[in-house]
Length: 291
Image (tube, rainbow, N blue to C red):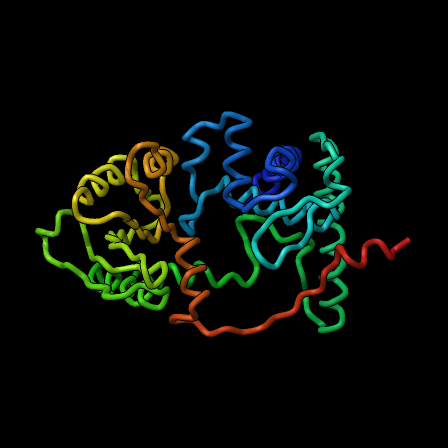
Protein backbone atom coordinates (compact mmCIF):
# COMPACT_ATOMS: atom_id res chain seq x y z
CA UNK A 1 0.00 0.00 0.00
CA UNK A 2 1.21 3.49 -0.77
CA UNK A 3 1.29 6.24 1.79
CA UNK A 4 -1.34 8.11 -0.23
CA UNK A 5 -3.82 5.23 0.01
CA UNK A 6 -2.99 4.69 3.66
CA UNK A 7 -3.86 8.32 4.40
CA UNK A 8 -7.29 8.19 2.76
CA UNK A 9 -8.94 8.08 6.19
CA UNK A 10 -8.20 11.79 6.77
CA UNK A 11 -11.26 12.63 4.65
CA UNK A 12 -13.45 11.33 7.49
CA UNK A 13 -12.11 13.76 10.12
CA UNK A 14 -14.76 16.45 9.50
CA UNK A 15 -17.68 14.06 8.81
CA UNK A 16 -16.84 12.16 12.02
CA UNK A 17 -17.12 15.31 14.12
CA UNK A 18 -20.36 16.24 12.35
CA UNK A 19 -21.79 12.76 12.98
CA UNK A 20 -21.00 12.93 16.70
CA UNK A 21 -22.67 16.33 16.97
CA UNK A 22 -25.73 14.86 15.26
CA UNK A 23 -25.75 12.03 17.83
CA UNK A 24 -25.61 14.40 20.80
CA UNK A 25 -21.80 14.61 21.15
CA UNK A 26 -21.25 10.87 21.68
CA UNK A 27 -21.99 7.52 20.11
CA UNK A 28 -20.93 3.91 19.70
CA UNK A 29 -18.48 3.24 16.83
CA UNK A 30 -21.01 1.63 14.51
CA UNK A 31 -23.56 4.37 15.22
CA UNK A 32 -21.01 6.99 14.21
CA UNK A 33 -20.03 5.19 11.01
CA UNK A 34 -23.67 4.66 10.08
CA UNK A 35 -24.43 8.34 10.64
CA UNK A 36 -21.50 9.36 8.42
CA UNK A 37 -22.76 6.99 5.71
CA UNK A 38 -26.25 8.47 6.02
CA UNK A 39 -25.08 12.09 6.04
CA UNK A 40 -22.91 11.60 2.96
CA UNK A 41 -25.27 9.16 1.22
CA UNK A 42 -22.43 6.67 0.70
CA UNK A 43 -23.00 3.87 -1.79
CA UNK A 44 -23.11 0.16 -1.01
CA UNK A 45 -19.96 -0.17 -3.12
CA UNK A 46 -18.06 1.99 -0.62
CA UNK A 47 -19.64 0.40 2.44
CA UNK A 48 -19.07 -3.19 1.25
CA UNK A 49 -15.34 -2.84 0.44
CA UNK A 50 -13.23 -4.97 2.79
CA UNK A 51 -9.66 -5.26 4.02
CA UNK A 52 -7.60 -8.46 3.97
CA UNK A 53 -8.90 -9.19 7.47
CA UNK A 54 -12.46 -9.19 6.14
CA UNK A 55 -13.33 -6.02 8.07
CA UNK A 56 -15.09 -3.11 6.39
CA UNK A 57 -12.55 -0.69 4.92
CA UNK A 58 -14.91 2.22 5.59
CA UNK A 59 -15.45 1.40 9.27
CA UNK A 60 -11.71 0.74 9.65
CA UNK A 61 -10.86 4.14 8.18
CA UNK A 62 -13.40 5.91 10.39
CA UNK A 63 -11.82 4.21 13.41
CA UNK A 64 -8.40 5.51 12.39
CA UNK A 65 -9.81 8.98 11.84
CA UNK A 66 -11.16 8.78 15.38
CA UNK A 67 -7.70 7.83 16.71
CA UNK A 68 -6.05 10.88 15.13
CA UNK A 69 -8.80 13.12 16.54
CA UNK A 70 -8.16 11.63 19.99
CA UNK A 71 -4.48 12.50 19.64
CA UNK A 72 -5.51 16.00 18.53
CA UNK A 73 -7.64 16.42 21.67
CA UNK A 74 -10.99 16.61 19.87
CA UNK A 75 -12.30 13.27 21.13
CA UNK A 76 -11.99 11.63 24.53
CA UNK A 77 -9.98 8.44 24.83
CA UNK A 78 -12.70 6.13 26.12
CA UNK A 79 -11.95 2.72 27.61
CA UNK A 80 -15.56 1.58 27.20
CA UNK A 81 -16.08 1.91 23.45
CA UNK A 82 -18.07 5.15 23.36
CA UNK A 83 -16.73 7.97 21.18
CA UNK A 84 -17.25 11.35 22.84
CA UNK A 85 -16.43 14.89 21.73
CA UNK A 86 -14.28 17.11 23.93
CA UNK A 87 -15.02 20.82 24.27
CA UNK A 88 -12.48 21.43 21.50
CA UNK A 89 -14.17 18.87 19.29
CA UNK A 90 -17.67 20.27 19.80
CA UNK A 91 -16.74 23.54 18.12
CA UNK A 92 -14.24 22.22 15.56
CA UNK A 93 -15.03 22.19 11.84
CA UNK A 94 -12.18 20.64 9.89
CA UNK A 95 -11.50 21.36 6.22
CA UNK A 96 -9.64 18.91 3.98
CA UNK A 97 -6.51 21.06 4.26
CA UNK A 98 -6.72 21.12 8.06
CA UNK A 99 -7.25 17.37 8.14
CA UNK A 100 -4.09 16.87 6.08
CA UNK A 101 -2.13 19.08 8.47
CA UNK A 102 -3.34 17.12 11.50
CA UNK A 103 -2.30 13.89 9.81
CA UNK A 104 1.18 15.24 8.94
CA UNK A 105 1.64 16.57 12.45
CA UNK A 106 1.02 13.21 14.10
CA UNK A 107 3.02 11.31 11.48
CA UNK A 108 5.99 13.51 12.45
CA UNK A 109 5.39 13.07 16.18
CA UNK A 110 5.18 9.28 15.92
CA UNK A 111 8.20 9.15 13.61
CA UNK A 112 10.26 11.15 16.11
CA UNK A 113 9.05 8.96 18.96
CA UNK A 114 10.11 5.80 17.10
CA UNK A 115 13.46 7.34 16.19
CA UNK A 116 14.19 8.02 19.84
CA UNK A 117 13.06 4.56 20.87
CA UNK A 118 15.16 2.95 18.13
CA UNK A 119 18.18 5.02 19.11
CA UNK A 120 17.83 3.84 22.69
CA UNK A 121 17.58 0.23 21.54
CA UNK A 122 20.13 0.52 18.74
CA UNK A 123 17.61 -0.52 16.07
CA UNK A 124 16.56 0.86 12.70
CA UNK A 125 13.03 2.22 12.24
CA UNK A 126 10.79 3.48 9.47
CA UNK A 127 9.72 7.12 9.44
CA UNK A 128 6.04 6.41 9.13
CA UNK A 129 3.05 6.59 11.46
CA UNK A 130 0.74 3.63 12.04
CA UNK A 131 -1.67 3.34 9.11
CA UNK A 132 -5.05 1.67 8.69
CA UNK A 133 -3.84 -1.19 6.52
CA UNK A 134 -0.70 -1.95 8.56
CA UNK A 135 -1.89 -2.20 12.20
CA UNK A 136 0.79 -2.67 14.83
CA UNK A 137 0.77 -5.87 16.95
CA UNK A 138 -2.78 -6.68 15.93
CA UNK A 139 -3.85 -10.15 17.10
CA UNK A 140 -7.27 -9.91 15.48
CA UNK A 141 -6.19 -11.21 12.08
CA UNK A 142 -4.46 -14.23 13.58
CA UNK A 143 -7.58 -15.22 15.55
CA UNK A 144 -9.77 -14.80 12.47
CA UNK A 145 -7.28 -16.85 10.44
CA UNK A 146 -7.46 -19.63 13.02
CA UNK A 147 -11.27 -19.61 13.01
CA UNK A 148 -11.28 -19.77 9.21
CA UNK A 149 -8.93 -22.76 9.31
CA UNK A 150 -11.40 -24.82 11.34
CA UNK A 151 -13.70 -27.35 9.70
CA UNK A 152 -17.32 -26.23 9.18
CA UNK A 153 -18.41 -28.43 12.10
CA UNK A 154 -15.47 -27.19 14.18
CA UNK A 155 -16.55 -23.59 13.66
CA UNK A 156 -20.10 -24.49 14.69
CA UNK A 157 -18.79 -26.18 17.85
CA UNK A 158 -16.57 -23.27 18.84
CA UNK A 159 -19.51 -20.91 18.22
CA UNK A 160 -21.56 -23.16 20.48
CA UNK A 161 -19.00 -22.79 23.27
CA UNK A 162 -18.83 -19.04 22.72
CA UNK A 163 -22.60 -18.74 23.12
CA UNK A 164 -22.49 -20.85 26.29
CA UNK A 165 -19.73 -18.66 27.75
CA UNK A 166 -21.82 -15.61 26.82
CA UNK A 167 -24.79 -16.71 28.93
CA UNK A 168 -26.85 -18.96 26.66
CA UNK A 169 -28.32 -22.17 28.05
CA UNK A 170 -29.13 -25.50 26.36
CA UNK A 171 -27.07 -24.65 23.28
CA UNK A 172 -27.23 -27.43 20.71
CA UNK A 173 -25.96 -27.90 17.15
CA UNK A 174 -28.58 -29.25 14.76
CA UNK A 175 -26.15 -30.63 12.16
CA UNK A 176 -26.92 -32.30 8.88
CA UNK A 177 -28.13 -30.93 5.57
CA UNK A 178 -31.79 -30.93 6.59
CA UNK A 179 -31.43 -28.16 9.18
CA UNK A 180 -33.21 -25.59 6.99
CA UNK A 181 -30.30 -23.16 7.23
CA UNK A 182 -30.21 -23.39 11.04
CA UNK A 183 -26.93 -24.58 12.56
CA UNK A 184 -28.03 -24.55 16.17
CA UNK A 185 -30.22 -23.11 18.88
CA UNK A 186 -30.08 -22.07 22.53
CA UNK A 187 -32.02 -20.28 25.24
CA UNK A 188 -31.20 -16.83 26.55
CA UNK A 189 -32.63 -16.02 29.99
CA UNK A 190 -33.29 -12.32 30.51
CA UNK A 191 -34.46 -12.77 34.10
CA UNK A 192 -36.10 -15.57 36.15
CA UNK A 193 -39.44 -14.79 34.49
CA UNK A 194 -38.43 -14.15 30.87
CA UNK A 195 -36.39 -16.24 28.44
CA UNK A 196 -36.54 -16.90 24.71
CA UNK A 197 -35.22 -19.34 22.16
CA UNK A 198 -32.49 -18.17 19.78
CA UNK A 199 -31.45 -19.82 16.50
CA UNK A 200 -27.98 -19.32 15.05
CA UNK A 201 -26.24 -19.83 11.75
CA UNK A 202 -22.47 -20.02 11.27
CA UNK A 203 -20.71 -18.86 8.09
CA UNK A 204 -16.98 -19.60 8.03
CA UNK A 205 -16.13 -17.26 5.15
CA UNK A 206 -12.78 -16.11 3.77
CA UNK A 207 -11.65 -12.58 2.84
CA UNK A 208 -14.06 -10.59 0.71
CA UNK A 209 -16.81 -13.22 0.81
CA UNK A 210 -19.54 -11.19 2.46
CA UNK A 211 -22.88 -12.39 3.78
CA UNK A 212 -25.54 -10.84 1.58
CA UNK A 213 -29.13 -9.67 1.86
CA UNK A 214 -30.66 -12.86 0.45
CA UNK A 215 -28.85 -15.02 3.01
CA UNK A 216 -30.22 -12.91 5.86
CA UNK A 217 -33.70 -13.16 4.37
CA UNK A 218 -33.45 -16.94 3.94
CA UNK A 219 -32.30 -17.33 7.54
CA UNK A 220 -35.19 -15.21 8.80
CA UNK A 221 -37.65 -17.32 6.81
CA UNK A 222 -36.20 -20.45 8.44
CA UNK A 223 -36.75 -18.83 11.87
CA UNK A 224 -40.47 -18.24 11.42
CA UNK A 225 -42.49 -20.24 13.91
CA UNK A 226 -39.36 -21.68 15.52
CA UNK A 227 -37.78 -18.87 17.56
CA UNK A 228 -38.09 -15.21 18.53
CA UNK A 229 -34.49 -14.30 17.75
CA UNK A 230 -31.79 -15.24 15.29
CA UNK A 231 -28.02 -14.73 15.09
CA UNK A 232 -25.75 -15.04 12.06
CA UNK A 233 -22.09 -15.49 13.00
CA UNK A 234 -19.42 -15.05 10.33
CA UNK A 235 -15.64 -14.76 10.13
CA UNK A 236 -16.14 -12.25 7.33
CA UNK A 237 -18.59 -9.36 7.24
CA UNK A 238 -22.00 -8.31 5.91
CA UNK A 239 -22.99 -6.22 2.94
CA UNK A 240 -24.76 -2.96 3.70
CA UNK A 241 -27.92 -4.43 2.15
CA UNK A 242 -27.67 -7.37 4.56
CA UNK A 243 -27.47 -5.00 7.53
CA UNK A 244 -30.52 -3.11 6.29
CA UNK A 245 -32.43 -6.38 5.83
CA UNK A 246 -31.48 -7.63 9.30
CA UNK A 247 -32.97 -4.49 10.85
CA UNK A 248 -36.01 -4.16 8.57
CA UNK A 249 -39.07 -2.82 10.37
CA UNK A 250 -41.95 -5.22 10.77
CA UNK A 251 -39.74 -8.32 10.50
CA UNK A 252 -38.05 -10.37 13.24
CA UNK A 253 -34.67 -8.82 13.96
CA UNK A 254 -31.60 -10.84 13.05
CA UNK A 255 -28.45 -10.10 15.06
CA UNK A 256 -25.31 -9.93 12.92
CA UNK A 257 -21.90 -10.91 14.32
CA UNK A 258 -19.07 -10.10 11.91
CA UNK A 259 -15.39 -10.98 12.25
CA UNK A 260 -14.51 -7.89 14.29
CA UNK A 261 -17.38 -8.40 16.73
CA UNK A 262 -16.60 -12.12 16.91
CA UNK A 263 -13.05 -11.35 18.06
CA UNK A 264 -14.41 -8.95 20.70
CA UNK A 265 -16.72 -11.69 22.01
CA UNK A 266 -13.86 -14.20 22.31
CA UNK A 267 -11.81 -11.58 24.14
CA UNK A 268 -14.68 -10.58 26.44
CA UNK A 269 -15.14 -14.12 27.78
CA UNK A 270 -11.43 -14.98 27.31
CA UNK A 271 -12.25 -18.09 25.30
CA UNK A 272 -9.26 -19.44 23.37
CA UNK A 273 -7.26 -16.27 24.08
CA UNK A 274 -4.97 -15.20 26.90
CA UNK A 275 -5.19 -11.72 28.32
CA UNK A 276 -2.09 -9.58 28.60
CA UNK A 277 -1.53 -5.97 29.61
CA UNK A 278 0.51 -3.62 27.42
CA UNK A 279 1.00 0.06 28.16
CA UNK A 280 1.59 2.56 25.33
CA UNK A 281 2.59 6.16 25.86
CA UNK A 282 -0.35 8.54 25.33
CA UNK A 283 1.39 11.14 23.17
CA UNK A 284 -1.67 13.38 23.04
CA UNK A 285 -1.47 13.87 26.83
CA UNK A 286 2.09 15.20 26.69
CA UNK A 287 1.57 17.29 23.56
CA UNK A 288 0.10 20.19 25.54
CA UNK A 289 3.26 20.42 27.66
CA UNK A 290 5.59 20.98 24.67
CA UNK A 291 5.17 24.76 24.71
